[in-house]
Amino acid sequence: MPAPDLSVQASTAIGVAATVLWTNPDAPREIDAPVLAPDPDPRAWAAGLDTPARRDLNDRILTQLLAGEPVEVLEEHRDWLRVVAPWQPSDRDERGYPGWVPRAHVGAAAAPAEREAVVRVEETRLEPGPGTRGLVSAALSYATILPVLDDAEGRVRVATPGGGSAFLDASACVVRQTGHAHPVDTRAVLAAARSFVGLSYLWGGMSAFGLDCSGLVHITFRALGRIVPRDAHDQADASVRVPLADARPGDLLFFARPGKSIHHVGFAAGTPEGTPPAEGPFLLHAPGTGNEVCEEAMNADRRSTLVDLAGRLAD
Image: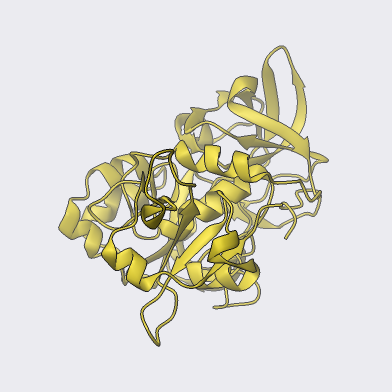
């Protein structure tokens, strides 16, 4: 799948730094107020969730959507919109990942452009520009993609949802042509994924404010110029399957219990020098609620559920 083509006009997009795609409008709890506000604070929200509150997200949230990410509105219900997110392919809907978002978090999409700026640091802030609105006060996550209007003197002027513009620090982003299939090197994949080591696991997380296992895979490839499916089983279906013995660092390792669908994914991270062969390869992954993104030897449970074919999404 090629990079998102920002030269194609979308009518609606996410107009806040990051929002949550919910299973239904009744799914949020009182503790979720920071991420439901008109100007949401996803980092504060995640920081305020203890382990039980994080476990309780499993049937509530589906994924996260980043600033400028297009959505197609399917249904309106009071302060909520049912949408599909085309940048997050899913077998749930051929048009993109389906779910509900607060109406206040969706607005008019930015004007198309021939180039795009991709945030390649954990987070960064916009400097005000002509017609800039709420995004200036927010921290943009890694892998946020916005159309480029021009760039000079260490700043990149980007189009923002709602018709305004703002400036990104050139050192915080990469500018590339839109609509092109960019080569993705496995070394770059691993380097990008390793930058999240230490970040707390968040069910449905798909931002620098929290990640789940398949979110780590998706956001890493998106930032490097390749759109891959959002969920682990879809990522397996989209990949070139290779025997485990032929897996390269940066390939995907999948996990499933007998007779069950794939429930976990991580990156093959190679085998450190001096490690007994039986303990390799190491796994770079977001293990689960209560844990952090890490690179580690696989424990007995992981080895017993390791699927016998790895997946290759990089070149």
